[in-house]
Amino acid sequence: MNNDKVKFKYLMNLWKSLPDYPTEEDIIYELSSYMVKDGRSSGEFTTQTFNSVFGRGWMETKHAEVIQNMLDSGIFIESENSKPDRIKYILNETPIYSK
Image (cartoon, rainbow, N blue to C red; front, side):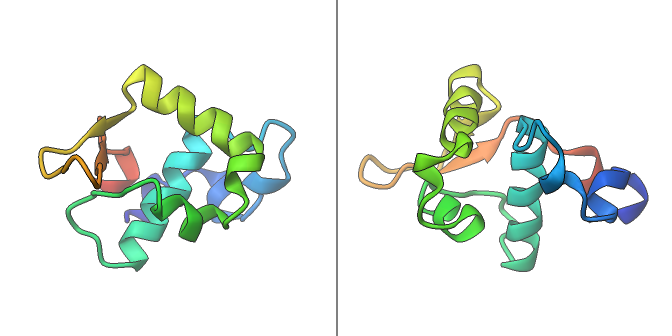
């Protein structure tokens, strides 16, 4: 992850205290950060990954609504490595700080 391209709110660890948290951008940042730390260079993740990133109760928070919108709008797309019993997703577009 290129810290020179990461937004100030993330570098200062402020984004979770902002009134509109979580935004799509926040979800992407947290998911990307988690995957880097977890060594997932393929960028693939499942809905189970959200339990690790946001905690087991994420489905009862605003995160669920934002993530569903991201799936519906094509920000998260199904990976070619997906299987019917285990759907894998990737980001449709690589974040600028990951390049």
